[in-house]
Length: 295
Image 1: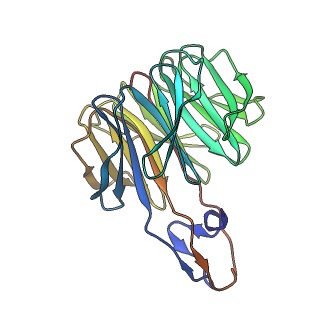
Image 2 (image 1 turned 45 degrees about the vertical axis):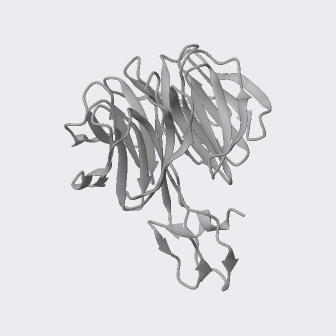
């Protein structure tokens, strides 16, 4: 049941709704080490910092319903339960070295394959729809979905591109920036991490620069997530996830620490167990995921 994602805006329930809602959670992927993904409370305290273990080279992370999808440096995407148990280690195979970004919309799963310069389209049940839906990209990395638009960072080059979810170019490029990796959309705002510059830049979704250094001083930032009025950023060299507000002010630069080259971060709102009253209004809540190359 996905109703909750249509009735939450900026973390506040729309008036007239009462629901039994569990707390939001943060999921973080690590590239190095034996701990591949951890689960945390919104204040950074661990729920299970070793949620998924036993592998190496995880880059992208996406969550849909009760499934966690993780891109791996061996050219696969694996599927796990939210409790960390493995469902299918070879959910998607045949990708190049270090597939990075993952994004989910409904039953559609988009995978950025940096080696082949493509973004492929699959279903959340593993069916291959078009492994080269979008091609000719320069080491595509983070993916961000906004309506029927797919924003793609290309960390090997300078472009952030915008394609339709059917693969047609909309604006290519939307903007140019050194080594753009993670991308996140909130309303008409586009946030981009520059892997080489150590910054998060803010643009409009049409590419107008608003702030080239909204957040600076980061170490090879990769994944970005937007939730409410805050940005969550994987500060990879410093092995942490930091929290910043949309003005770029520090909320907690050490929100989650003790990581091992964190590559991606996702904010998840669990499904409600009970809906008691009708909804008097609705607002779309958008989630973000990013990924990494050899991130």
